[in-house]
Image 1 (cartoon, helix red, strand yellow):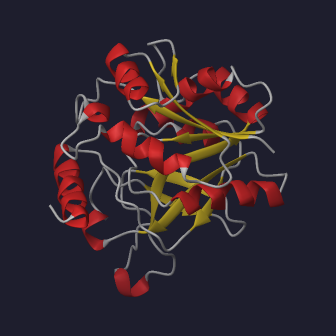
Image 2 (image 1 turned 180 degrees about the vertical axis):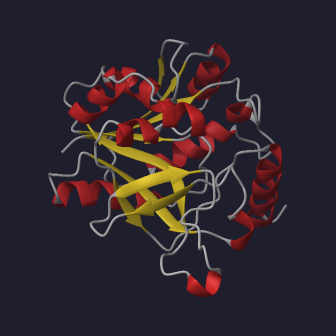
Length: 247
């Protein structure tokens, strides 16, 4: 089974312009994410999909593989689908968001292995424990899942809401992590779907899949990768890197 990991990257983020090229660690952020994906045992090809020549130059400088895509894509999965079209032999396409430099590569393998065991899974993603300080943070996306393990809904709001207080909470709050895996046919289906009302309201691309009645398996892990949404998140990442390197 051939697996490709596409890292969509654009320069013009509203919350953090130029995020893929932030280089206070000595490497651009996109390189950290690329190297993380390359360490996954079940991933055969890693590439960056972008429409920006500055990002292309940075990726080529560190020896990474890059594909130029159209600028008008509404989300990363659409961009990943365009890039994946160059690999007709791919069985699974992973869309790894370019702001997950500390994702454990084993989590990529975990998603691939789940799809390999169960051919009925068209799409899969990851979730894990939500920290108390993230409950009301709209940058921390929450997910609720069915008894079968499929996503019921993703939201920036605190879900599920414990109406009678935390003492009456019977379902955990889970944080969604920025990775999506689609079978090749499924990501083509996704790219052919127009944007949906909930997707546009929450600004969450995975809702398009659910709104069209498709299932997305959520693999729950106890690991907690720290995604980078804001300059403050990036500063904390740089501090952790410097501490790790002893500088």
